Image (cartoon, one colour):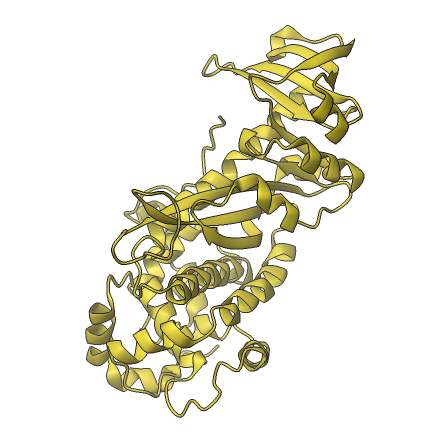
Length: 390
């Protein structure tokens, strides 16, 4: 990366063009396209995300004001809002979904060992959850949710080493969370953290059969019989540590073996929590610490909703919405890869703010961040700091 290139160009050089074109060819994205290729669409949508554009008209006017710079950034077509809207409407969103998966595979190894608890356990800890994005009833009639609301859901399996998503799936808003557990490929020895919405004993037993571990919340109406009681240390917040078996015939059929139930009192909030896990060896306090890691996926959702454009959309069709969300995920992963590549101490929050005002400056992108003193950047503290558990 030399000083003669725009920051925008250097950022998108992180994308392997050969791999990108393979994704395009797989879905014939540029078939019979004479102008405004998929790559240009990706660059324009990336510009919109990174510079916080609010609408198609906003994107068009901003690009017109810097038209002379765009050719050197790879955007050779004069972009109108109708051109961009047509591309988002017709180009298959799976192109950008496949690109995001390639970026995930690059980002995950860079952050290995960043989570202290994962490092202690010598395995990977995943947090699985979903977030609902509300939509206008009159404009997004296809987004089934309820009779009074339209919405889509974004389901994410987050690697807690560095907040890197390894699985992302977009569904209608009325899709049950637990059904998405069928789409996961569980890795033996890894931990999967979920809230009580995912308590489905048939699906939890599949995790057991995969030789992986889960930690989730027990529902209040769970019926069980106690098979064994373990000694606990009340000073550490552990109230009960029991091996139990399902009492009702159908739950016992779905989960035929004993399951561990832990009651824990949070010292900070005083809240009583009941955990379920199939790991019978870990200390009960470590199980409570593991569940606390699940909060990271909530922070991930909060971050992308605050810093990327996934609540207001540039198109109303299902394809346009999914395209915008997947490109936002790609841009997030670009920043995550850039952070490790440059070995900067700045948070993703701070990097996003700096890039947003420097996209079309000609300077080495490494110098852009190495010259920053994070204490003087007047932005909110990163959401990835000072985690508090549920």
